Image 1 (cartoon, rainbow, N blue to C red):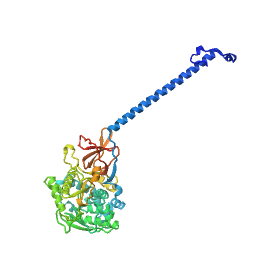
Image 2 (tube, rainbow, N blue to C red):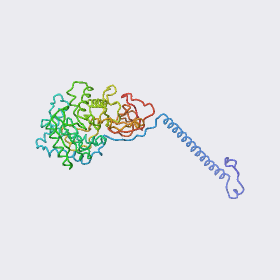
Image 3 (cartoon, rainbow, N blue to C red):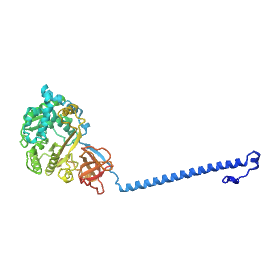
Length: 468
């Protein structure tokens, strides 16, 4: 068979001559076939080179990924544990009561049209007394009718929004109160804590509890009792027994308490003390313990303060003072180690323990009242500690060794490389948790304890924990 590689050497066969094919036609056809063949070969070569280049890039990427995998630790498996502010945990009837709180107050202490019109002004004036004019505030400001009305219509309402969110998410065992238990609320004002707890925990509404509510303002106590009874009637529940005690912190009550609470009291008490906060926390812890029975293994305390640095520092010191008395913190702490957010080390930012949630779920009427009073509130924040006797706390030493549990205690922090970090409290100290997933203040998580030496953040000294 003749070759088509060199058309110039072709000759006509006898049958081609008989068919009338010229030598020129045969050579021209051979040249066309040769060009087609060359094109096919070039195309095959190009595709082969392209495939080789792609394979080379793929191998290079695999090598790069493999190198990264060797240098980057495998991300830990993150388990979500709980949240301090899960709105879904708040009972629906409690949310309805809070939404209609203005009507409930009006049913017990109605305002006339002039008082209603002046309410935003009075709220704003009270705000000045409670913040920038604290030194000029008189101790019995809630004995004055205008201030008390402003407090109930605004601050009590906001405190119920905050505390019902918190109480609904506290550990169930912590609020496992029994029949005939004696409870004490110090600095009770208009019964803020008992009302919030009654709303938050339906399982306690039918438990026969006696509450001693102590405050220097008998008028505030009566105002609160009227509201509490109205709420109990609205929920169709028997109210707890309320014993109003006009007095100060440290004044004796007739019975020993199994559950002691106080909210927004120590920030005012600390203003009148010239002593160091360490000394004050120790003395206040002793005074709180004096209200309880040392033989009662179920004694528990709940102390809540505004989420400001000074209060966060005091809560941390109070926690330490109680731990020296064989109490352990159940919330928000995930551990019994030294508090890594005690607000003391200013060189590392002085991180203090506080937890925040946004107010988008707050009643619209309350948000409108805030705007009218020029006190727009987009975030609610608090510092607190829930304590119980060490004998009541369950031992989980094995879990503590195997897992690292931490609670988010900051807003998102933008980091280089489009990363996001969150400060968190843990048994090993302050953490900087880094993840692409959105986390929220008050949420707690658990990961397997890292087996390697964790790096530290140059700014805060926190251990860096990569969650992705």
